[in-house]
Image (cartoon, rainbow, N blue to C red):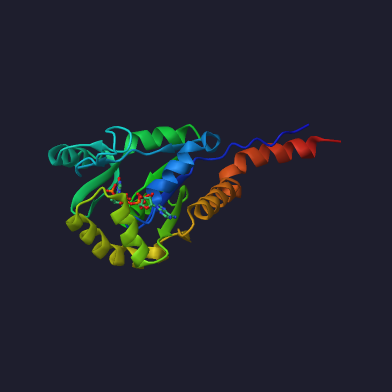
Length: 214
Ligand SMILES: Nc1ncnc2c1ncn2[C@@H]1O[C@H](COP(=O)(O)OP(=O)(O)OP(=O)(O)O)[C@@H](O)[C@H]1O
Ligand SMILES: Nc1nc2c(ncn2[C@@H]2O[C@H](COP(=O)(O)O)[C@@H](O)[C@H]2O)c(=O)[nH]1
């Protein structure tokens, strides 16, 4: 009997949001579910490390000079200045993940998303996460207690410029209840993995098998 395997061409699943809307939390939930087999793209950044962060796991924290060298050597798939610091996605690990037919998860801003879309439009699936209100966004940043008052104010100011970028994304989710948002993300991932162009080779072989049956 022909079997229809679940393999598909690797997806780049991009999550973006204003700071504090919840994409890091959602990223963690996605990665915790091993059955989803998602691999996080670990960005490089010149931002100082937060107390809760581990170098090499959440980011690779590097000096500005090293960032500029990576950027100038074309080692970054995309990069941007966000909230006064530099962030970028190392190209090589992403190419490796995709060449294995696996999916990469990106937590990047709208500028980086635009660059990835231009380079990999067939493989990128973009999701924008909105907060339920600006009041709640502020409350989340304050409750997280990882940034100074000045940094929180700057991020809230930037949030308005980021929110108007929602039209740039394939999907937009309002993260009110975290479990409901996570369920919506799972539904997006499952549907995107089933898209015909991503599974064309498998389906072709399966259909040939069906046609060969008597
Ligand atoms: N649906 C939710 N309801 C209540 N709190 C939430 C929800 N989602 C996330 N949070 C909390 O809000 C805070 C900010 O979330 P998180 O760090 O995931 O945001 P972020 O979008 O990744 O921010 P940044 O861009 O600054 O990294 C965290 O303390 C997190 O636990
Ligand atoms: N364009 C890119 N944006 C990135 C990357 N890594 C993270 N980010 C975005 O920066 C802000 C701030 O993040 P924080 O960890 O300092 O709170 C947030 O919007 C991230 O999505 C990257 O490699 N490229």
